[in-house]
Length: 243
Image 1 (cartoon, rainbow, N blue to C red):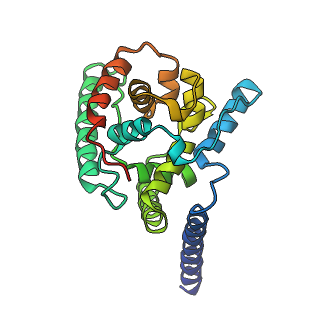
Image 2: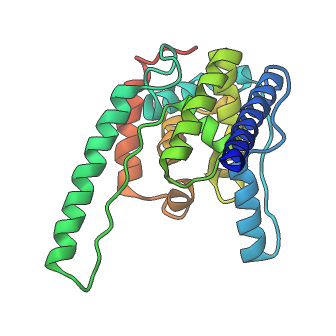
């Protein structure tokens, strides 16, 4: 019994130390840009294994040097209430849970009708920009209750330690926009041959729509969905409140 208690105590201490590490890292981000994120390091390794070299584009720029069109487009596409929520939108998570449950039920029915060809359900997110940044900075892409719980806790730390504008700045400078393309400045130069500060509304909407699947859309620039969704985001951008 004592051994079990000792083991549980060590586990709790390790968990507390991990949360303290996350908190201290986030606190430094008030003045220092993160050198790299968990997602970036994972992508580096995958690209190196596949290509034997590391094509990499990332140039950190301050939020005022990122077009307000892109700021509005990303918020409109990813998290329309970013400026007002506390890091997590429970209503969005509930809707995503319901959509995923219905999609999985449809996939299960299709699989039962065609046993030799399993159907895959498309997974819908529900994470805010703050949650996405929490995952990108520190966590893996696996979908488990533990990871979602840790993501929520880190999101709370981000909101507690950093102003909204800084959260958006770090997100826009570190998010993936294609293979080896990270951040708004690199994306603007890669796709439109101009700095992020000069992006227009249509260009901004186009980049924002790519975010859920950047490497997929990088290979399909003429996608009809990309064009249609970009028009939807452009129509929403005017109502966005910037932090």
